[in-house]
Length: 407
Ligand code: NAD
Image 1 (cartoon, rainbow, N blue to C red):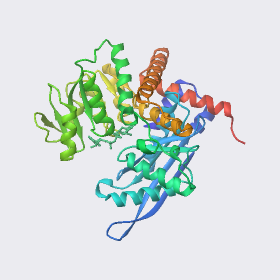
Image 2 (tube, protein in one colour; image 1 turned 90 degrees about the vertical axis):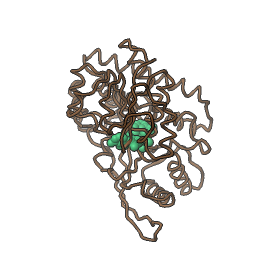
Image 3 (cartoon, protein in one colour; image 1 turned 180 degrees about the horizontal axis):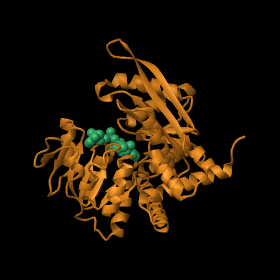
Image 4 (cartoon, rainbow, N blue to C red; image 1 turned 120 degrees about the vertical axis):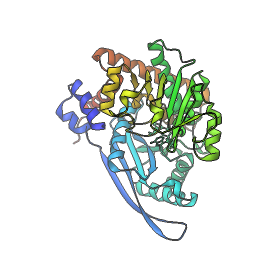
């Protein structure tokens, strides 16, 4: 999907074959196999990856995910998307991604800490505050970032908070980082809704995934006056056309481990959450969920991609024909990396900003990026995904061209 989207944008930009040759492939792919002692005394070898796609606009930046489904191909695609994401919002980073094949839900906190510290040590040959700065992604969190920061700092002999972002506040994290991805989704959705004359107050919102991005999006869209009609997680979904209370759903999930079983709601399957009657659909779970098999049944007018890669290129075509506005992942969920960038800047200068300043700066960047993408889309008569990719790829290509080919 990532390469197909790249080629399509490159065609429209008339990008030279030489430039495509450079941008198509990641710069570095590191695979590490490392032993971790389990609680029962046994040793298990885990496999992890760190991929840097392009660093011509600045240090590499991208999250780390822990999942049994992690593959090198997935990490490569996510790293490429990070390059475009940083370029589309105009922050001075290249793209990276990392992952470890593991099932964190089946591991104890001690096992998770040992796995994290050993993985951090293995990839420390390529990460660093000036070279590659990891962040949380699926199944990783501020605690895991704290262990990575501590491990890296132990090796250097002094604290280096700028080596990762998404850290707890007490060790150099940023105000606003937790809400940043969902807040960015809200800012661009507001712009998109304004363009089609759809008031957010009273708009029906359905959200797939109720983790960091999804649960916070539910809270923020609810505060904005939207009606959250459906949410889901891996175990299933819940629907109530009169609207759900996101705070109560979150409490239920914290107590029971899932949104499933929430009272005063109809139980639906994880797939159905994409197809319920709604105005705004927020996929906030995982990639490849909107496909040619279900795109025709989607009823939303706006899809804001909080997750990375939720829509396949075939589904994009179907949604385009139906007139659905898809705010592409590299734009819609760029609020997370933007506040990560703020965190890194604050760490490097050891001077911290308040949450108002962060929210204001984030809104400015998201609105500016949205306007730039819309302008590209109008200029080339194309959808927002192609426009965002073209904008991003042209910025990375320009940096690559100006720097020249070494030696
Ligand atoms: P998370 O682990 O906190 O939450 C993921 C949620 O999705 C969980 O509720 C899980 O149960 C659910 N889920 C997973 N697979 C599902 C499926 N097949 N059907 C229904 N629900 C499913 O992860 P997150 O940080 O919220 O990330 C979610 C997505 O957003 C990912 O694609 C991630 O790359 C993207 N993203 C996150 C951030 C961020 O700051 N957290 C930033 C940019 C992009």
